[in-house]
Length: 255
Image 1 (cartoon, helix red, strand yellow):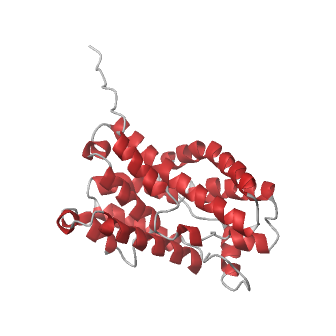
Image 2 (cartoon, rainbow, N blue to C red):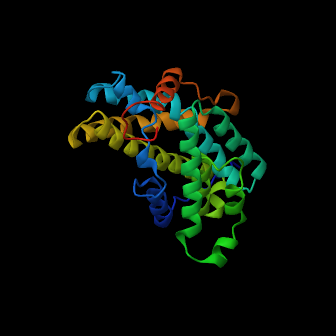
C-alpha cells in the first residue's frame, strides 16, 4: 500500500499577523536609520536615479541578502525550534565574522539587541518571559545577538511547536513564510532609504519596491537551497562603499 502523506496545515492567521508585525518598518529596532552602503553609493555616483537604485537593490538582494542573512535565518529558525543553542551560536558567530566593515557589524548587533529587548517587553508579563529560556540565551550570545539570529528567535516564538519539529514540509513552509517577512522588511526599509538618499519620489519608491517583491521569491529559493559550505558574505564594492561611508562628510544614515 502506498504511504499517504498528510497535507501540511497552513499557518494560522495569528501567526501570519505576527510575521507581518516583524516585517513592519514601525518595529522599534532602528532599521530605518541604516542604508547599508546605499548612501555612499549615491555620494560616489553609482546611484543617481530610479533605474540605478532599482538595479543596486536587486543586486544586493541576490548577491548579499540571499547568500548570507536569509540563509542564516533559514537555518536559525529550526535551530531555535529544537533548542539547539550550539547551532544558534555557530550561526551567530558566522554573521559577526563576515560583516565586512565596522558599520555593518554595528548595525547587525544593534538591531539584534533591540529586537531582543522588544521581545522582552512585548508581553509585559515577567512570568511568561521567564518561561522561554531561549530569550536569555539569545541575549547572552557573544559579542551580541545579531539581527538574523534574533529575528529567527522571534519567528520561532510565534510559530506553533509542530511547525519546526513536525513534518518536513510543514517546517519548510513555516521557514519560507519567515523569510518572506524578513525580506519584505528589508526591502521596505531600503526603499525608504533610497527615497531619502537619492532622492526620489514616493511613486518611484513604490516601483522599486514592486521590482524587489517580484524577485524576492527567487532569492528565498536560493537561500533555502544553500548548504553551510556555500553560504557567503562577499560583496567587495559594498564593503568599500561602507568603509568610505564611515568618514563621509555629510550623511543621513548610520551605514
